[in-house]
Length: 535
Image (cartoon, rainbow, N blue to C red; front, side, top):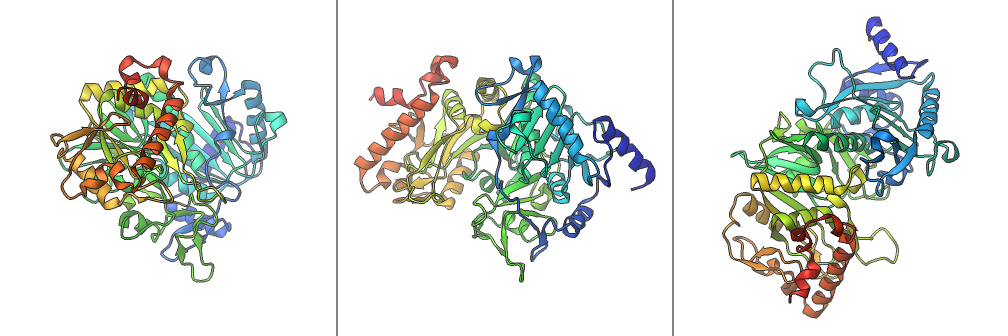
């Protein structure tokens, strides 16, 4: 770095309180960050060239340690039932302590952006004490073509070595993710998990964009050669990344997008894929990134001698991750944009074995299932627990939802109606019984059903009405075993299926009770309880 550039960034950081820093690495390219990470002992190079790092105590997000500054500008705009508050005074104390902690440290600064559509782009400056965190966020956000004159609207200060004081800062623990939305500042401390940085950007965009009439979405997206865009909502483990990485379609992005009057745009410039038990045969494109120079491999086990990866080893965490630029996927979009979607797919991994592999949703049903955000997790990591656990994460991303879910639900519903978008619910979970008795839905069947939906081949096929949820289910689809389309027929004991279906319906009804007073009659009518009552 030349002297003039060094003086400039030092002055800019001093303006926000980061004075008396030691070395500053400003907008270093990936190769330099890679070298720095190795030299500093932050990770090791695996066979193939990936950078393997571990994140210590935190191997995933810490939603209970995330706070939003509560003040006049956020008092009536934040969904406080879902977001923990921090007072302005507590945040200012935290900010000053952050600045003091950074004194005489080496830091890595990256000037990046969230959002591929220029009109809604969020210039973001990330300051971190780890070289690999700088490399990670460079992969995950968008590198501006011209960084001269960069003026951040959001600044993230990421200091994993900082420990919060609950008595002093109003936190729950030594870990803190604090968002000052009024001033565009995020403070992250006490965690080495890099995903907190990207999710902070997503949360801020989730807050800002609805006021501009833009729908922010926790989703993946791809587009066919006819410009037929598709959006895939889904929580972790539902196949969102896998199913959107289709070699026959162009990948727009795998996690976070906006939907404006112009179409879809990716918030990110990279992917953050789950790689536990990753199959080279089933997911060749994502698997290839694990053997590629520059990829950041988070909590993936590696042999220290041979440097061979073991993607099946979840001893550190089941949440092993691969972070890489979007350009690493051969058929990825070069613009990060796509036309207005023709199809919305809501993915769920139903471990109860009740939901069909695909179902067509009306706009009201789409809003019901969007607000519900259902999937099920298998508690395989907990001793003695074999029963599936239902998870309802509203808008398929509750931890990143700063505003009331109704804001996003209404936005989505209006966009669906305005653009005549087809909506489908796809179950990538269990069939032939619940977890422990049945088996996972074959990915070949899921892909065949998805392709049929995306190509419009399901628009005019005979449909049956699901007895439990009231949505329309195809009776037959070419290339797919018809039996699988009716989950009840895949169970050896149909009585056990009926009992499990009633149990799941009850879970849906109980979860949706908090939304009933805020939705219209048609959305209430999409409740599965009413379907059963009508029988």
